[in-house]
Image (cartoon, rainbow, N blue to C red):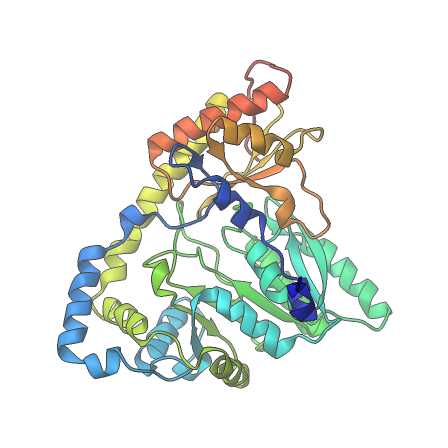
Length: 411
């Protein structure tokens, strides 16, 4: 009998299915209300607009739209992204933009280009599980930095950086989802963003700012990006059209210094030669048509309503002792259960009640977070959110010994 494990490279041994992927397997039953996947809602996909754009492209320029394109991305879209970034305080040009297959490919490219085995990578804990998976293959050493309701604990980071410096060490990069964080939904304060940039300049490390939810804000305006504060070229910005347009097109981008973009493009060329020209042309045409100025406000309104339904339902049904975040944007609410409860153990009971979620432990580098849960409100209808939260809270109540529902506080 052949043991096919013997053929795998050492880095392949590090690859493991995430808790999110496993949660998807549990929710193939259509009767289950799943809060597991942070997917954009298909009900907001602009099908008619895309049909018109594709018909226009196939009629006017099929030889371009259906052909291979530049590794860096089509020039028109790169310039449009640069204009978008410049309008948000990040002065850049098209040659400082690399179009990628979603921001997930950008994470893998960053690992390829910047990480050697043993390099120190700092991440929020809890942090985005997809970044951990993408960078893990390049065998860095991960270290978590805690966060609170104002985002990354920059004070804790500063102390740790000082300790490392005294040992003659420094991190290679820090990864953050600073705005509407995945998985907790919190946003890093402006004061902390400024402090973080100063620390990067002092200790000479890169900041990878992953910002896919920036446009999905519910109150006021989002905090300016970390990249907009960058005067030393140490911030690599990752953006995406997946959350505000069509995730299936897989169009994202990197904004960074030219030398970094050039090296990332070389790495991308050996990976996939180029991204989807058709997908890029669709996005570019939508921008020219002014589509996003009409579409994004409607998304904000709709997702805010879903967020509000989830928060209101938690206030109504959650047992005493359960607390949660109140996100100002994005797709996620983060629940913290009493310390003695284990979200993984409870999940099987929740599935039996036909509701699913992602356990928070998968987002922790140190194996912690056993009593935490990520709930995504983006895909479900308002009625599904109400019923799903009711079912989940019934399970939580039963695991708390049948105690009556009390006043639970948002954090």
